[in-house]
Image (cartoon, rainbow, N blue to C red; front, side, top):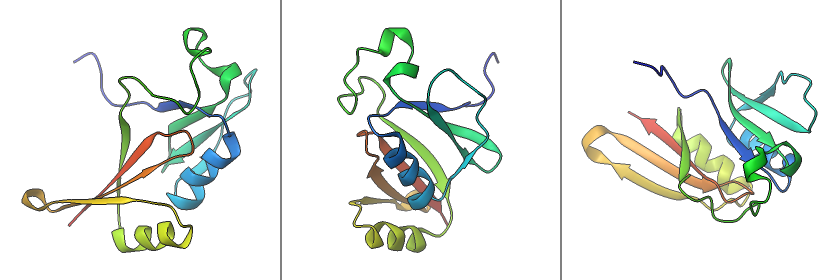
Length: 129
């Protein structure tokens, strides 16, 4: 197979700091190493992997620099993470007054939570067991 795994998702942010805070402070990921680039941004890690790259309009791919930040994302629907301890995540979301949606897929023992980041991107969190 030519591809092995998802490398990362990049989000063009109207507010870099607010977006970083959602992914780190609320979702429990962490900011980590980011090489010296010619534009501002953050790399957000899940374990040892930088799974979410955050950048502003100036760092977006040239063909995307005119896109409306926070507007419709076209075919990009959502990004999903697996997690542990759904009740703890719900408590974090409630403590910060972050709206969320729950779904359960009983056939496979899956408890899902959905939130939107400050850019309108849907973040899905999957808790099994």
